[in-house]
Image 1: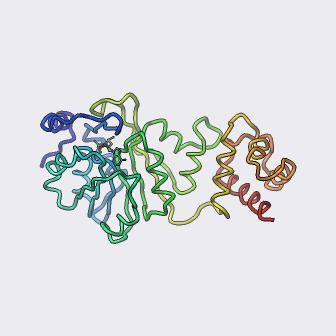
Image 2 (image 1 turned 90 degrees about the vertical axis):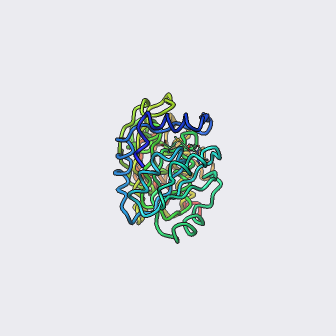
Image 3 (image 1 turned 180 degrees about the vertical axis):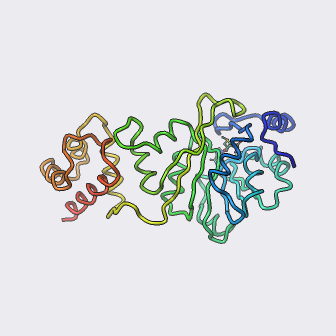
Length: 288
Ligand code: SAM
């Protein structure tokens, strides 16, 4: 079958089935072959790869990935798309569509069942209304995933990829970078989609580390410290951490001195190493 990701092909599939787009499901379909190739190359898909796709739409990316990967399992919530996918993916024997809501799915069980527990790559043009929950679900639930290469709203990609002391650096940057090295795969302007959304997009690459880069003794404390530090960005670290209500101000002052972080600094200036050191010290003080 010819590629059907060109603008006219996407429209003709949509017209053939009289498909009505659902804005609330984030349905903006890719219409650009070059972008499909960039996503696939960004994920470095080989014939040994097991791929999970979230939201195949009419199968544009699924179809091309199936040519390169060992197997693709695509999770699509919209029942109306299932017969369309049966048609567009009819020749893709190694592609399977599951009609489900990704947020309600037990992904580990899915990987055991469909991929015999092998490591997977998540490659998708994500529905933007749940980008962060999807990415965090894959990272926090200890899913055997090596790469997450996903199209997201430009601003979200910039936050994920941000470095300390910039306006984009926040709790999301720390949460993702705790698990992954990040890179920008491609910038994708809004006119590459049908219907056209009112935001631009970026394909971001999250390379999940097989080892722990940051020595964190207690992850709950680490993320609580991160959350408090970014809670009110104009507050000094001393005040933000005091508002956690875990330790008194004097103890926090001593902890900050011990880990050599100035109490007047703002949360957004801390590196991940510093967040780790700080949360480890707070954790050891709260244990006593
Ligand atoms: N991959 C297609 C493409 O690039 O043209 C479509 C991408 S579109 C941005 C997002 C897709 O995610 C839609 O097909 C939508 O129906 C689907 N979707 C939305 N919410 C979902 C959910 N909770 N679980 C699974 N799929 C979902």
